[in-house]
Each structure stands twice: as structure tokens, then as C-alpha cells.
Amino acid sequence: MKLQIYLGLVTLIFLWAYSTPANGYNVICYFSSWAIYRNFSGKFDVSDIDPHLCTHVNFAFVELYEDGSLYIVDPWESNDKNDGGYYEGFKQLKNLKNTNPGLKVLLSLGGWNEGSKNFSIVAANPSKRQRLARECLALIEEYGYDGIDIDWEYPTLRDGSHPEDKDNFVEMLKDFQDIMKPKGLLLTAAVAGAVDKIESAYHATGLEYWLYKNADSSKINLGLPTYGRTFTLADRTKTELYSEVLGPGERGLYTGIRGSLGYHEICEFYSGSDSTYYWDDEQKVPHRVWEDQWAGYDDQRSIQYKVDFAVSHNLAGVLIWSLDTDDFRGECGRKYPLSYAAKERLMYHEAKKKNNK
Image (tube, rainbow, N blue to C red; front, top):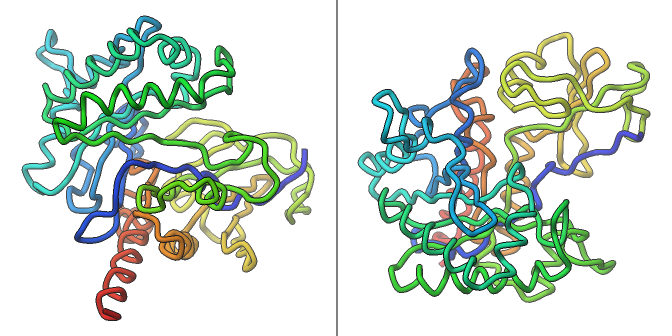
């Protein structure tokens, strides 16, 4: 296996259906609800969210059954009304609007762990699609949310998917739109940025491909990661790109996933004198090496370049995955350094536009 640079990792994942707000750019943030179970300082809950950081916060995730009904992954954490000690994350997230009435909160359906099988089955059946839309609507109305985000990863791909998924996904979105638009609710979709997940093509990649296909740039938000991809080097003296690796990197103390570290883990544990920082000036991204571990990730500097890229393509804003792997406690400096780097760079561009009028 060869080591290759990761250009912002998941920066070509797009969320569309938000139009650019009248008062500036979108800063759409995901809250990984399972982060409340992380160890030590990695534990993250709704009380850690700065209500003024994001324009939208998405609660990740609820899932679905094959019959189109909703599945609450963790009732205790989300909305269990039968246990007096429940956490009730749905309600807590909505209550952030008490501090910032302009904040939009959405419920995100799907995610990587949900996969594609149930989505594929439901999307192929009109009655199941409509049931799913109705149940999503009922849930967000119960909690006073502003919309639904559909995160199907990915139509036609992964186990249980079918060639008709892309067409059926369009029909699913139409069914959701039919019942949500009259109520003024938001409908969004997290979609792939990699061309091989859209269709085979050679003339463009990522964002350019979406725009080539006439996607409305004012409804596209560029995904920014607050985590890095990691690898274990075959030879710790060979750290340059295309060096041999043995496989994914070691697990992080907080996230516990091989091959991935949150930015808070990288900056807190691996940014000292025993590691080496590298900057790729062509790709405008950093990577860091310690012992036999290699991590490609985004820092505040590279985030600013990506925001500039989004603005140069007239996008609606950015999407941050996710708040809970940013340095939300400020262990390495200010709180939420990556998220605020994105927000403040967008504010800079907004002020620049106003001054040029």
C-alpha cells in the first residue's frame, strides 16, 4: 500500500438545498450524538456547542427500517420518554435556539453506519418513501426542528444497493419536498464529492463535476473535516508521499477508530517536539509524522484555503464534520479553532463583498 496525500480528506462532500442566506454564508455543523460516550476530555454533548458558531446544526443520526419507518438509534441519548434519567439530545439541541433564535437545527437521517441497503429498499417503493417522509416530518414537528438532512452513503454503492438507486433517490427527495416545502421546512442532502461515486468521468473531479452538471452553486456547501486520516509506516525513516505503509494508523484515545484521529487528538497528543510537521505548498495541506505514524489532516491554515476555494466557486458556504472532533475544549489554544477559522474566513469574504459594492 502506498502513502498518498489526502486533500482535505472529505472536503469534497457536499450538502445541497440550503441557499445562501441573505446575511452571509452558511456554516453548517454536524453534532455526532454518540460523542457523549467518548472517554475523558473527548466526551462531547450539546452543552459544549457554541450556539453562535454555526448557522445550522445537524443532529446525527436517526436511521430507517426496510418498511420506511424511523429507527431511533439510541433512545436514551435522543428522546426516551420512558426513563426519568434520559439525556434527550433532540430537545437539548433545539433549546440552543433559545440563546440564538436565528440558529437552524436539523435532524440527519442515515450516515455511514446505516449503509445503503434500507435506503435502497425504501427508495424503490413509493408507499415506503412516503411513510419515511411522513415519519420524519412528525418527528421534527414534535421537537420544533427546522428540517431534515438525508445522508444516504451512497446510492448504487455498498452492500444492498441497486443500479436504480440514483433515480429512486430523486423520487425520494421529491416525496420529502412535497410535504416539507408547504410548511417552510428545509430539505438537505449530503452527497458524494468523489466522481467515482457520482458516475464515471474523466473531464472533471469533485466540485467542478457537480457544477459541470449544472448544479446550482448557491445550494452547495463544501464539506470541511475536523479529523485526519492516519497510516502506519512500513519504514519510519521514509515519510514522503508514496512511501509504503502497513495499514491504518493507531486508535485515538477519544475516537477509538483505526486510521482516523480527531483534530483534537492530533493537536493535543501528537503536536509536540516528538512529531514533525510538514506543509505541502502545492496542495495547501499539512501532514504530521511521529514514530511510525503518519497523519494527513486540516489545520487553520488549510481550512482558510478551502474556504477561499468555496467562495471562488460562489458556493453557499461550508459544512463542518464534526464539532466534536474539533478542539472544542481549547486544549491547544482557542476553542473550536478549525470551525472558527472557517467562520471568520467567510466573514472576511462577506465584508470584502460589501466593501466592493
